[in-house]
Image (cartoon, rainbow, N blue to C red; front, side):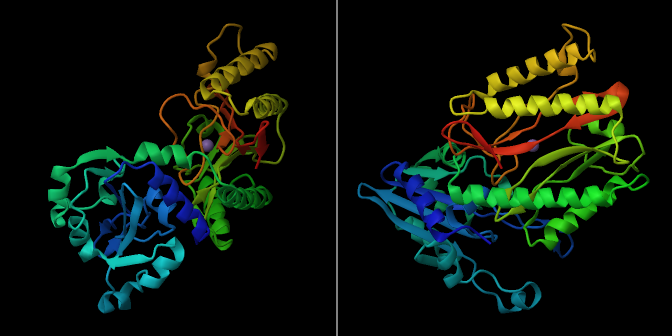
Length: 393
Ligand SMILES: [Mn+2]
């Protein structure tokens, strides 16, 4: 599924208004990559392409052209139907479906792309997404594109799109909210299921089953189920160990809905009850998170919020006697307080220090990791920045 047609129309309009006069922007959905004989990796369309079209199929190209009058054409190039291939892998997106999802009137077959581009001889600037991975780009040898590239100045679309994507519309926030709700429901189910002796992978598999059963796009990222000491490895995804009574287990997981990610972390006791020490540490992390919710507001600089988190941890851990005074807190808290969240789990964002603004969706994820005690704690929620502060989603 995708968001409303209007959303994609607006995004193209916003992008178009920022392009140079006599320019062309070419954006690719990507190609399928072979994993093994007769089988490809699951296809994942380029997110900038999806953001502008609502289409998540391979081998589709969007071309915007602009002259002194403004954006004069928006064209979509799709693959031609192949009746033999259709018997094996089903139908490709049709002309009408492409129009319906994206709101683009001009839909052609991809073989016509070089001819269409060559027709626009007055083009002086050519935009591509420079960050687009190789497999999500296009072979320029395929046609007249190569000549056009030679005569044009090349410019990067990525910074323009990153700036747009970092501010979410209410419709995007709604999709993220839905992803979070399903993630949260999945955690509740896991909690009811979990008992000593189970393996980390069983709970990870159950979460994947749950989010897929709910009709989502599936996982936003590889599920982390890290028990005991494994939780001190931030992106532990091997999930091979069995759960021991008395240990804590750290879950970092998320569902994806209409392309948008949820990203939550919870740290729970395997046997349902925390020791006094575990409870004290979890309480510290929770209280840091509460204070950071208050600090997330328009104008706040992420770098400052990170420093504030470190100070809070240092102060709380010292006064509870967990670490000696003037100790380096980065030994126990060694990641950022949060990141942008959207189509990418670590979503695109403008270069430089991020300054929070209304419409940004961010994670708030303080963590404490005490390797010697075999304890890793992270608690993560997602917020949208409002005019006054933030709302926990
Ligand atoms: Mn996160």
